[in-house]
Length: 124
Image (cartoon, rainbow, N blue to C red; front, top):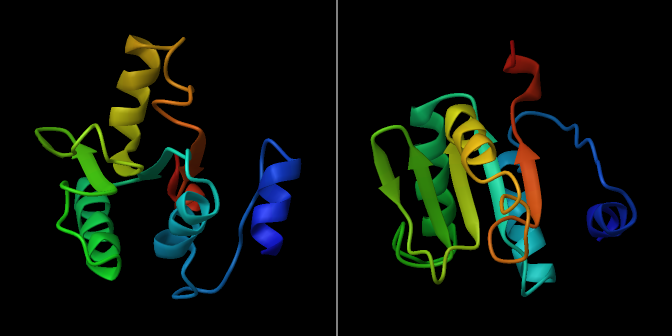
């Protein structure tokens, strides 16, 4: 609840917590549950991480990956149903390509209303 209030008040929110507390798997889910129009993009530093986290979150939600609200996009592989995907896990490279390819449409009600950059400490 506190997280949702912070997100509503601020453009940027930094979430810090112990390993295993749910930052990666839970924050995006909180956002799509609290806002029925939310479209959340979560970046991961590596392809394996993006796919495995997306798979785990889809399983937690009782969905098939790429066929419900959870999907992923990494170089060479995508599992997304555009009409229903509201929580997309992707690599940094995919995010950069989207920003370069469609900068005016990247952050809109139909593409991305929230951006979560996970594992910030692993950025170079």
